[in-house]
Image 1 (cartoon, rainbow over the protein chains, first blue to last red):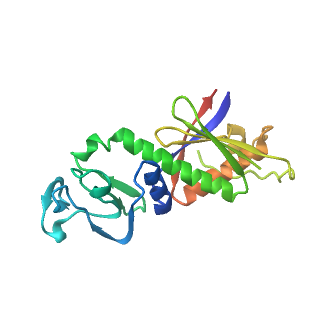
Image 2 (image 1 turned 90 degrees about the vertical axis):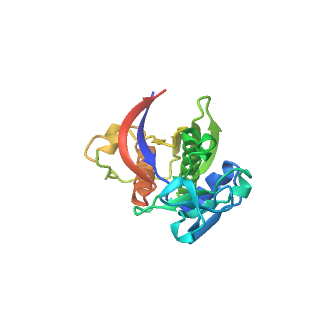
Length: 146
Length: 76
């Protein structure tokens, strides 16, 4: 038995988030300092006050700092967005329709890929070389040596 | 539990190995034992590795990538 300390991670670094999204199949991602509106599947905007509703007004649109445009997801999908929150972390913006595809398990997997990229970058920066493997339960094991 | 690095000086250039686990829900499991988390306690035999893991944990927390530690766990 080994003793481990558990840390809950939060998506804060846009570079790691973009890498995680690429791992999930979305390699074309917009990263923005100033958030842009999210488009709905009909080509209008997703409404900020109700993610399942749409609007033609950009002022009423939900905006995001990291965006996967719907054309890279599915023609019937809405844009997938990540909004930078007041604490600096990114929150996923997923409509009810898209939550069938981008469900809690998908978000968890994205979080795992994010954690992987952040942890790997850190240990490599600490001078370690890293080997990795995926265990039967889906856990990623990083073996860092120096 | 508050994290802080130990005060024992490093032993030297001995090799160090860290097993880091990343669960499917994204949580990170870092190899840090209770002894090595308590600066005043007698360090364990994996002191160097645990200090490196602790350094990693503190960096991740300081940069806002993680919060914690939430809890500890024995893993086979």
